[in-house]
Image 1: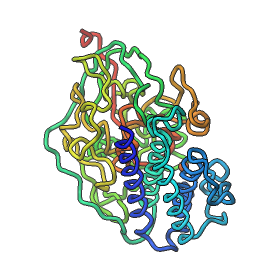
Image 2: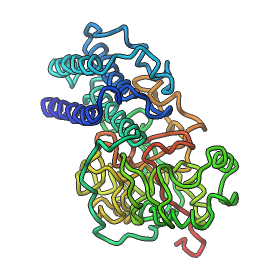
Image 3: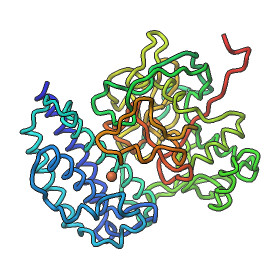
Image 4: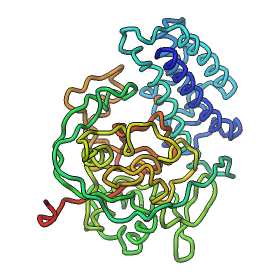
Amino acid sequence: MTEQLRTHVAEQLENARARTAVLTEAVDDADLVRQHSPLMSPLVWDLAHVGNQEELWLVRDLGGREPVRRDIDELYDAFKHPRRDRPTLPLLNPAEARAYVATVRDKALDVLDRVRLDEGRPLVADGFAFGMIVQHEQQHDETMLATHQLRAGAPVLDAPPPPRARTPVAGEVIVPGGPFEMGTSTEAWALDNERPAHLVDVKAFAIDAAPVTNGQYERFIADGGYDDPRWWSPAGWAHRHEANLVAPKHWVRDGAGWAHTRFGRTVPIEPDAPVVHVCFFEAEAYAAWAGRRLPTEAEWEKAARYDPATGRSRRYPWGDEPPGPQHANLGQRHLSPAPVGAYPDGASPLGAHQLIGDVWEWTSSDFRPYPGFVAFPYREYSEVFFGPDYKVLRGGSFGTDAAACRGTFRNWDYPIRRQIFSGFRCARDLRPDELG
Ligand SMILES: [Fe+2]
């Protein structure tokens, strides 16, 4: 088991690094050090930061080795320098950053060879620290993909288009009421905020069988949704005006319709694909316009994991096996969401599609700890973000790797953010005549 785990860890580290290489080698050095948006770091910061976290946790903490570059810790501490300030720091240049991450990786692999993975330390058990570092790099790979989406200039990334729809998917599914197990105490690489497993009683509700599509969202725009305060919360309406929101980010008028810009290419929107690059306030306004609401985080997870036949919560909507290309649009294999109906093999037992992959889905819930939460291995991973400022997103996007996505995985962001690969689906309470 231990040798198998070691091989798995090495493969996962390698996958993450291959993705980082694609994203950082697609552009020249001038582009790597440039800030493409005040919301994002220069790509070269992400690169060295990934190496620095790997050094701190795997080389120094777990391996007990001498520092490679203690002098740069402060520069790559995400809490010390907001993204907008990062271009002004004396950062490693691209060649130095590449050499640094390669040196750290060599040492990390050496630690992996020597460490006893069945050792009692919680940081080592099941390879947790390695899993955390794999997920950290993959999360930065998704962030770097978002930076690529914000970058001006000729396209540099390429990928085959996602699969076409294979089955018609429309309407909603009804999720029965009652308790279900939310979160996990057993998933080896689950992060602190996903723990522990606990029972949550969720009333019966209806949820969309698929994420809201571009075509559906276009009707909200055409119906004057952005100009009607009835659909917006007070904070959402204020933000809509302040930021002058009129359509999802990256949408541009195309005659009577809309096109959107994707990684440097402007193409007509696909009506059947999930809408992406909307903020929480836009999602909330659309739902109100449609006579519906956003699901709570518990509702989303119940729709994704609850198996009514057994009463168990699955790891993923389709079962317990890890995501394959037939299940979900993950891992940057494609550079856009897939049309609704493209992944029938990934549907939940109740018939909800594409909960995993394609687009992160906004929920109505604030980011809060589960009952019995314990910060691990450090408070800054999750705990400092708990509270009303952040909304939870679920399910991962086409830019998320399978290693950093599961039925219990929780993402969080400010409700105004839309440079991320964010979409949503709607839910509603059941009417009395629908309650069995
Ligand atoms: Fe980070």
